[in-house]
Structures are given as C-alpha cells and as structure tokens.
Image 1 (cartoon, rainbow, N blue to C red):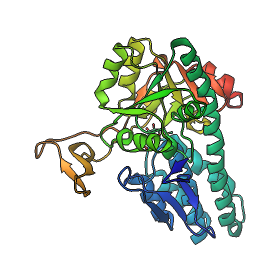
Image 2 (cartoon, helix red, strand yellow; image 1 turned 60 degrees about the vertical axis):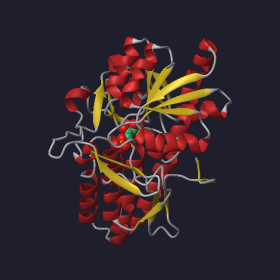
Image 3 (cartoon, rainbow, N blue to C red; image 1 turned 90 degrees about the horizontal axis):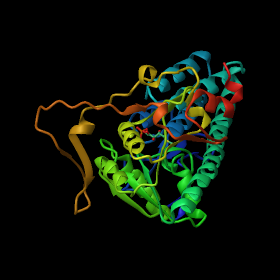
Image 4 (cartoon, rainbow, N blue to C red; image 1 turned 30 degrees about the vertical axis):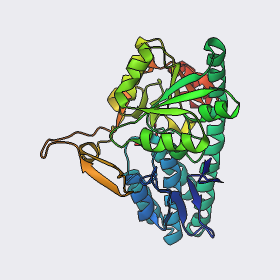
Amino acid sequence: MRAENRHYRTIWPAEGAVAVEIIDQTRLPHEFATVRLENLHDAAIAIKNMLVRGAPLIGATAAYGIALAMSAEHSDAALEEACTTLAATRPTAINLRWALARMKALLLPLPPEHRAQAAWQEAAAICDEDVVINRAIGGHGLKLIRDKLEAKGDPVNILTHCNAGWLATVDWGTALAPIYAAFNAGIPVHVWVDETRPRNQGASLTAWELKQHGVPHTVIADNTGGHLMQHGMVDMVIVGTDRTTASGDVCNKIGTYLKALAAFDNQIPFYVALPGPTIDWTLDDGIRDIPIEQREAEEVTQIRGRTAEGEIISVTLTPHGSPAANYAFDVTPARLVTGLITERGVCSASREGLQALYPEQKR
Ligand code: MRU
C-alpha cells in the first residue's frame, strides 16, 4: 500500500539478504521511520516491543528472524534456539507458531550449510503468500460490502477494532482488505475506527493507513460503538483475529467481544477476516484454551502522544499506586460471528463451515 507517496510492504529483505527492514509502528502516526533488523535478537525485540505487530506480520517477522539466525550459525542447536527465542515473544497470535513450524520443517532436514539460503527464500515466500491471501480476502469481503450497498444505499458504514490493515500484515490487511477493495471499486464506504485502548492501534495505525489511502473514516472512543449501532449508524462490523479455533471461536484484540455482543443485540452483521494460517486446528474451545497475553500495566496507566510543540511524550492517567491489569486479547464465541471471510471464501463460524473451505484439515 502507499505510504509517504511510495509503495511499501511492512517488511522486506535489505539488499544482499544480510538484514531485514521494517516500518517502526511504535512511532506512527507521528513519524514514519524504517528500522533495520540485523540479527535474531533484533527480530525478537521488534516483535516483543511491537515495532511490528498484527498476527500475519508477526509470523512473517519470525520467519525472517530464523533467516537472520541461520545466516549467523546454521547448526541444529542454533535453529532450535532461534525457534524457542522467537516463540517466547508473544503468546496469542498463532501465525507466529505456524511460521516457526513451517521454517523448522523445511530447514531441519537440509544440510546445515544450505539452511541460510533456504530460510531467506522461505521467509520471502511466506510474505508473498500473505499478500496473495489478503488480496483474496479483500475480493470476498468486497461482495459483502457491495450487497450491503445494494440493500441500504450509500455510504456503507463499517466499524472496525484495533488494526487489521496492511500494517498488521505484509500488505493489504485482513479486515481492511475488503474496505480497500470496495473503496478502489468506487463504493462509498465510511469506517468507524475504534481507538483501541490501551495501545491505540485504531487511533494511531488504522486511522493513519486509511488516511494515507484516502478512505473516509472517523475515530471513536472504544465505548461508542454500541450507541452508533442502536442509532442505525453501523451497517457491518469487520475485525481481524489473532487465532481462530477449529470451531470458529475468534480471539482478537481486547474489546472485540463487547463489539460482537452489541452487534448481535442490534442484528448487525459481525464479520471476521482471516487468513488460513490464523486458524488453530488443534483447539476447539477458544475461551478455555487460547493463551491470552498480559502486558505491562504502564500501557494502561500511561498514554503517549504528541504535544502542540511536536514533542512525543508519555503522560500518566491514573493515581500514583493504582494497580492496572492489561489483558491484550479476548475471545468472541462463534455464535456471535456472522461469518468468516477467508482467502477461500466466506463461511459460517463453525467446524462445518471451516472444514468445507479447508477439507485438507479434516480430523
Ligand atoms: O497486539 P496487536 O496489535 O498485535 O494485535 C493485533 C490484532 O489484534 C489484530 O486485529 C489481529 O492481529 C489481526 S491482524 C490482520
């Protein structure tokens, strides 16, 4: 997608396959800066500290982390150690484990001296596949938006939570891919952007990328969605996911569940856009079994922003000594989800729906 008037992906190999470059998402929307990852440690820190974030991009960065590790030392022990280090960075998005398992399955049987080159190629393949997948999600979601336009007239008002746009993937995004596809097709869309406390991925990242692309949008406080739905101001909700179980339970950024409840109560379609690698075929019950990341309390007690003078600062919101809890994700039960928008089409959030699209996963 376009940023700063040129085409970017969120991650790309530096010339000569010696390093990887990323967009530092902790500095958006106020500064656009790229960062060079030189080694395994840099890749792990970039994921942990959320310079890169979003399930598909975390997976792609982990794959390049393995390539960086193999360039330094290609033994079995080094591969094992790299997988362990990267797997420990963030617990919830399954794409991380998926990418590591794919890299390990490819690399371990190879003669060690061939591993580095194969790892760079495989990481690039994972990135290219992500772009193709997300473009297909956009095409399938576009039909849903077009149907809505025909049913109610324009504009189509879509609410989204967190950032599941191109910044969360290698390109296009998942939840925002249908919105970009609709906008590019000339369909009048307007996006309600949940700010998404505590880290404000909606206010700082989704708003930024929609603005870069010229898509009409309005940032709202997280608690606003229910009111808008009650007053007919939301036509559909589209969100992303960090892990969806084989039975269609959807784990996504904290607060997604409350939006799903409000949408259900107001008979508003609630769609989840996801690539195949975000499905955890080993799990059924998302509430019981998906590990929910808990992050530092400071993300809740403080907020970061730019002053009128242009300085980026953090300020404290809470009384000194008040404890804070920071659960990063929640689970929306399948019964509240109208449909899953995948690269293979739209299905019900159910075992039957998913298995019809991914028959090779039948247990
Ligand atoms: O904590 P984050 O910013 O990594 O969380 C991101 C989300 O919850 C996204 O909605 C999800 O990863 C889907 S991204 C296409």
